[in-house]
Image (tube, rainbow, N blue to C red; front, top):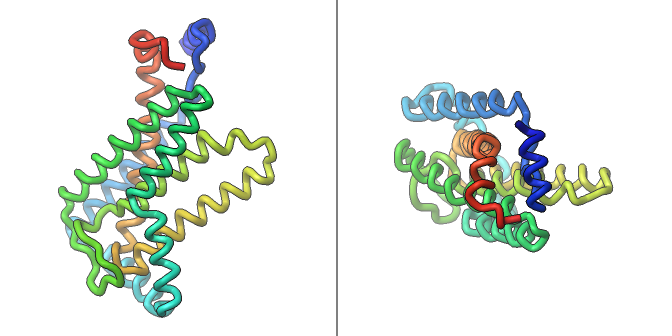
Length: 234
């Protein structure tokens, strides 16, 4: 079936496939989903381990709290806020559209919109209050972190669609390292500023990874039908 699809797409002058089929993908997705729901249940039922874990990380960050670090983490959290993540992802979509990767751009747009809906639904379902003593104002519920969820999507999008264009493997690994460090810094900033608990940011990473992998599988499952409906794209 894969060879048939590839042959058909080549005949249409279209992109063959955004992703390659990977039998282990479903197990990764399942692992992320199970881990996320277990964490979610632990938070809902105020599990003692999650409370202790959150407190221990928060206490560590209290030791480095000062005016200078406040400014640094406020800047990081601003650059990682959900609306900024939307701008970053739209920029990637525009880049993909310009280089004639229109289906990739549309897929990324779907992941962005649907992912934010899922994140919002989880927030209003769990209804976890934010930590006390916020350094900067933060409204809404705490779990999961919108900042970290959006940043995770941005990082995965760059990994998948941008970095493969770099032929120099050394630079490729350097940029990957920078992106991972950036995600970690955004996560730390949310906890440092008392906008989220540590388990909020962990949950966001698990949710974004699960949603990313699930959407890959959805694309591979229905890609043939997508091309039947509209073969004019890409």
